[in-house]
Image 1 (cartoon, rainbow, N blue to C red):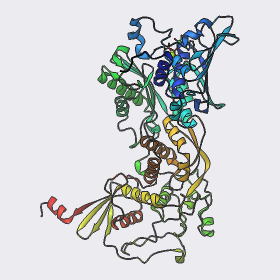
Image 2 (cartoon, protein in one colour):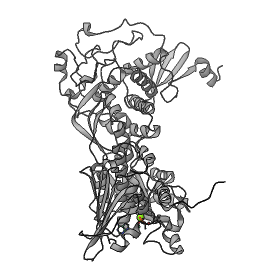
Image 3 (cartoon, rainbow, N blue to C red):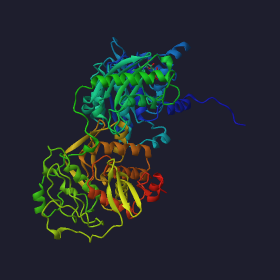
Image 4 (cartoon, rainbow, N blue to C red):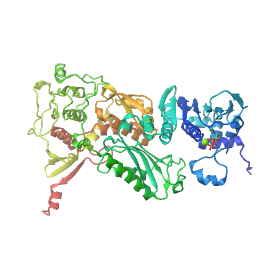
Amino acid sequence: MPVIEQLSPHVADLIAAGEVVERPASVVKELVENAIDAGSSAMVVEIQRGGMGLIRVTDNGCGIAPQELPVAFLRHATSKLRRPEDLSAIGTLGFRGEALAAISAVSRLDVISRQKGAESGASLHLEGGQPRQVEPAGCPEGTTLVVRELFYNTPARLKFMKSDSAEAAAVNAVLQQIALSHPEVSIRYIRDGREELHTPGDGKLLSAVYAVRGRDFALGLTPVDGSGEGVSVHGFVTRPLAGRGTRAMQTFFCCGRIIRSQMLTAALEEAYANRLMKGKFPGCVLHIDLPLQQVDVNVHPAKTVVKFAAERAVFSAVHHVVKDALDKAEQPSPPPKPVSAAVNPRGDFFQTMDAKTFREKGGAPTLLSGGKKVEPELSRRAALRDVGTAAPAVPARDIPVHAVSPGLIAPPPIPTGCKAPPLAGKIPEKPTAPPVRTDEEPPEQMSVEPLQAAPWQFRGEILHTYIIAEDGDTVWLIDKHAAHERINFDRLKANPEPVMRQQLLTPAAVDLAQEQYAALLENLPLLEEFGFTAEDFGQGCLMVRSVPSDIAAGQIRETLETLADKLLAGGADPAAARDAMLHTMACKAAIKGGWTSDPAELRALIARVQSGEVQYCPHGRPVKIKISKYDIEKMFKRA
Ligand code: ADP
Ligand code: MG
C-alpha cells in the first residue's frame, strides 16, 4: 500500500515554482509587479543571457524592513491579502504571496532593501529557497532583487529554455506590456549591458507608446477617449493610412491587465470599415475599464483571456469610441492611394547606374549578388513594372536593372511613368501580338525562341485580377496572383542556388511586435538564405541590409511581418519554418490582384498555366476556372 505523506515544504515550493516561474520573463513580471505594488516611480531591470544568467530589478518603492526580509520568501507570505473578504476585491489581480518563494526555490537570490525613511538597509541571500542570515547593508531607499542561475537545481526545466535571444525577447515583451499599462512608472530595461527600453514615467500613455513602439508607430496614432454603457475606452489607435500588415500591434488592456480578445479586435476593426486598405489592420493601445465584478479573468490560466458579463456593451463602447475618434481625425488629408497604384518606387535601393550605362556594360547585374541564380522570372518583370509606374519623383535611373536576369534581353530605358518592357523570349503565342519593343536593342541580344501558335488566345483581364483566355470552345478564367504565386513557390522550392539579393542603399530599420521580432531572430540564418540580411538592433527592431531582389523596398516590413506570423503559427519545426518562408516569398513576390498588369506579362502567365504546370496556388486554391461554351449557352437558355 502506498503511504500517504505530506510533501516537504521544499518539494512543495518546487512544484509551486513550476507554476509561477516558467521562464525568465515570468520572473521579471513578478518582480516588476512587486516593485509597482511597492509604490515605485522608477525601476531598472537588467538581464544577462536572456535572464538565465542574471535578473536584477532595482526599485525606489517602500522597501522591506530587515526583519521581514525572510518572511517575504515564505510561501503564502504577502502584505497584500489578509482576510478572506480581500480575495473577492483583489483576488482577480492575482496576489497569492507565492512569487518570491517560488523564484527563490529555483535560483540563487539576493535581496537588498531599505525602507522609506529608515537609517539603513539589510540584505539576505537565499540558495534554492534556503535563507542565510539577514545582514545590515548600506543601500538607497527601495529594493533590489538579484536572481542568478535560474533553474540551476531543476535541470528538467532548463531543457525547456529557448535561446537567450528568445528569452530576452520574451522579457522585453513583458516589460513593454507593463510599460504600456503603467505610464506613471519609469521603466529602464538593460539587456546584456545595452539599454533596450526606457520609458519616462511621466504618466502619459503616448510617451510610453513612443518609447515602446517607436517613433513611426507613435506618429501614426490618433487619441481615443470616451465611454458608453459603463465601459470607458481610452488610448490610441493608428490612423487608417498607418495600417499594419498584421494584427500584432493591437494591444488591449482590461482593468490594467493585458488581454487578447477576438471580440475586441472585431470591435476595433469594424470602426475602420471602408477606411482601411484591404489586407491592412489597425494597430492600437487601448485601455478598457469597467467595474471589476463584470470581468472574469479566471477563464484561462495565463489570464490573458477574459469573459465580460456584458459583451455587447463592451463591443459597442469600443466600436463607437474608436469610430468617433477616427471621424474626428478625418481632416482633409491626402487620400489613400488607389489599389492599382500600389507600387513601390524602390528609390532607396543601392542601384544608381542609369539605363544607358547599364546597356553599355552589357546588362551585367551590378548588385552584390548572393548567387548566380538567373531566371527569366515574371517577378522580376513585375518589379520593373512597379518602377515603371512609380511616382514621377523617381528618376528613371532608379530602375532596379539588377533585378533583370542576364540572358534575357537587356532592359530598354524605361521612361518614368511608362509601362515596363513586355516579356520577351518566351511567349508561345500567336505572332499576332508581337512583343512591343521600345528601344533599339540589337536583335542578336534577344534569346527569342521561335514563336509558335498557342492553342489559346488572350482576351483580356477583368477586375484587375482575372485573366480571360479562350481556347477553342472553352473560356478560362485565371487568377493572376494565385498563378504567379504558384510559379514563384515552385521556383523557390526547386532552386538549389542562393537567392538573388539586393543591397539596400540605407539599411531599413524595421520595428516589429515582440513575438514577431523573437520569431525572426530565431530564424536569422533562414532569412539570410532567402536573401534577407538582417541583424538584431534591439528593442524589437531588425536592421535589414539586403533583401531578395523579388521584394520591393516598400514591402520589407509587411513581408517580415507576414513571415513572422507564419513562423509563429508553424512552431519550432525547421521544415515548417522553411515552408513559411517559401509561402511568404512566393506571395510577396507575386503580382497582386488589383494591380494593373502588362498584357505581355499576363500572356506569359497564361502560357505557364495552360501548359498544365500550374494547377493550384500554394494554399490549395484553384488557379484557373473552366467555362465551356455549353455552360455559357445553358446560362443563356440556348442549350
Ligand atoms: P505578493 O506580491 O503576492 O504579495 P510576493 O511573493 O510577490 O507575493 O511578495 C511577497 C511580499 O514581499 C509582498 O507582499 C511585499 O510585501 C513584499 N515585497 C516583494 N517585493 C517587494 C518590493 N520590490 N518592494 C517592497 N516589498 C516587496
Ligand atoms: Mg508579487
